[in-house]
Image (cartoon, rainbow, N blue to C red; front, side, top):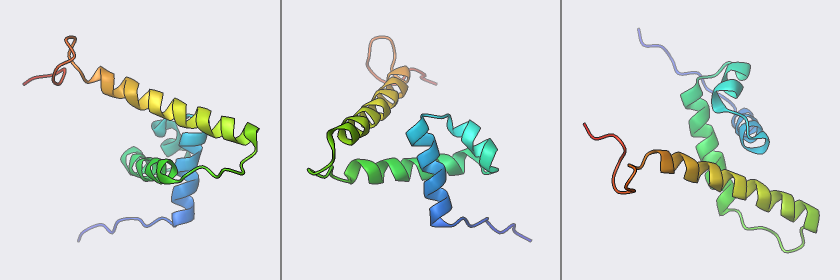
Length: 99
């Protein structure tokens, strides 16, 4: 008999993803704390980040909040770039591992 996939409330998914993104915590650590699979949480984080970056910043945001949001977005992009750079060969062309 197949095992049924566990369903999580959208609010739980967003809270978990926000914990990773806002606090710059490792996905594995948060997944262990919440008792969910790391790959499942990674999908939630990916969706949450996509939703955040598509959301335009409001022009009436106070400057301190705007700076904090822009710094957070910048930190996320820097982490993504660092991850992608690790996948390139030393000459910068193609993947690092060729079978």
